[in-house]
Length: 141
Image (cartoon, rainbow, N blue to C red):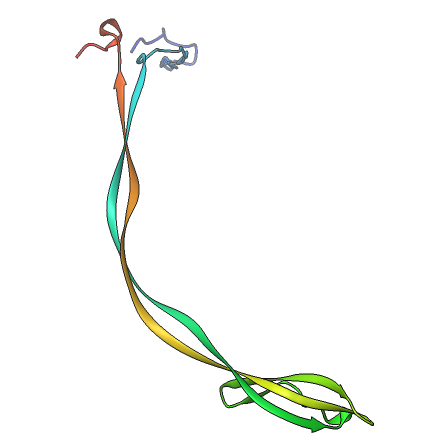
């Protein structure tokens, strides 16, 4: 380190240089390739379906009743166990008006389970991407 000459008070002066570095960054656009090629294929794969399906079946039977009832006593739709009974009414003309139950519909629902198996084709796509460059654009190895 350089030392300055002696000061008037008789002390030596020491000089220390201070250095500061600076950086300057620039950006530029670099073409790294000329494009990409995408390959897409579709494959069909069998898929086995094995499900239980429920189906309601109804049985309708006509039951003749042929009974005269007062107008205010006409029966309404009702259930007898699992069977829905729907009275079919008909007005008939007599000296007085009465309601005759002509017939009833008896509807019984039976739930059955059946086995259903089937193979269906499902499609699946696979994609691959290939990048390609021109010979002069490749960086040196």
